[in-house]
Amino acid sequence: MNDCIKAEMEYREWRECPLWYCVKTLLRADGKMESEIVSDEKTKIPIAIQSLEKPQDGVFEDASGTTYYTYHQGYEAAAKQVAAASI
Image (cartoon, rainbow, N blue to C red; front, side, top):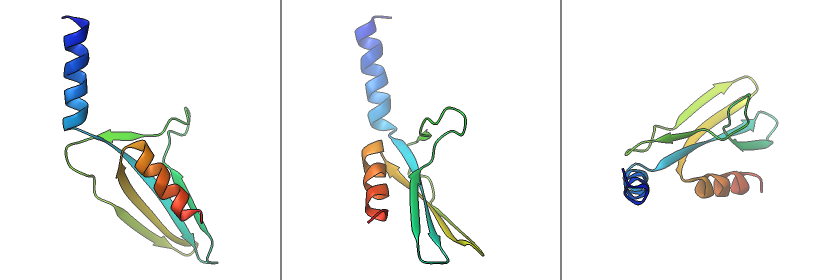
């Protein structure tokens, strides 16, 4: 297959199925907030899910605080969420 056609097909697939990045935000019981883009533990590479639909967000609560997992379309949007939570 022609490289140009292959690249075009990959681009169309990417546009039709965006990458969703997960942001983990911990609101600790003492009022402090921590936020990060979820990454692979070994490689430290951010984990992205390619899907037509946005993955479902999640909330978990324990004695140390409340953890929110939110999905954002594209790395830039996820980074903005981390920056906003750090203020």
